[in-house]
Length: 351
Ligand code: GTQ
Image (cartoon, rainbow, N blue to C red):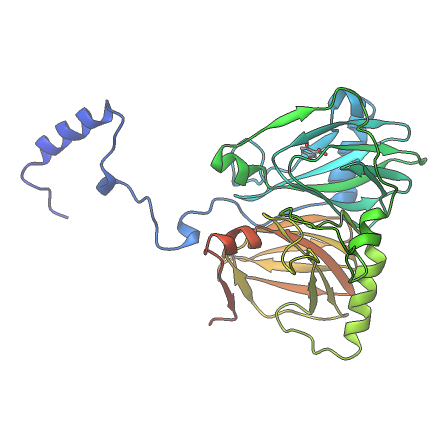
């Protein structure tokens, strides 16, 4: 473009504005045309057996869960700066607790989910209810509910933490409160919430008006059984295999107000068609092996996955999943938050 005749004057103006608390909108691109011009996180995989597990195990010899408060390795997307985020809107961490330890009680405004990766005998207590955790279980820790974790078993215990910290950070209302003792009091027996709300029934005379599910723990055995039942008659969705969403049974919506969670089944040899969505997605395979091919045409990245790995697919990046063996994958995303804000979209194939 030809230089305007008043270029010198414009530059003097920009220099002047630069010293103020303003900037000329026309010199920047605040609203680019496509997510790819804006999103900086990249598809990435963290390998459980070769990276996450050995490095977090090493931390077990250096610091106790109590000293650390939470012994967690936060996953940092290579495309993003600190504070740690796995994707623009989502936090992920790998947490380990050792036999006899307690991760002391606290509460905070960010909502958390746990997806159990490995071990036996550890528990988490949420809002006065203790849940023993088994691999594949999905557990919620709603905003501002007391929670502590402990371990009555014998071997190191690992789970993935998924939190909406970047969404809370974007708005500002970050609150954190430690409980004055290690453990918050238990007020209900283990299994109470599942008995009340997990049988497609609800307690008569009781009302539930919170923005999250009254069920804290969604056991893997039940979710897996549902997938197994559906495969007998359902068509395989070419973009997802057979995929179920964890819901709040009182609303039919997502189990938490900010994050959506899913479990999907892919049969041996299944290859999904290319799919993209505005939601930021974190996957953790439970059973099986395969790969994900993610990226714009010409810049695809192939990430090989196996059980307990964690991989991230950013907003609007096209991807395909391939299963070498029968596979189940857990995933959490910011879908429900985007839908509430009127932002969510998906694209199946090229349409
Ligand atoms: O277990 O409460 O990975 O508060 C990050 C923040 C775990 C937890 C994390 C947390 C927790």
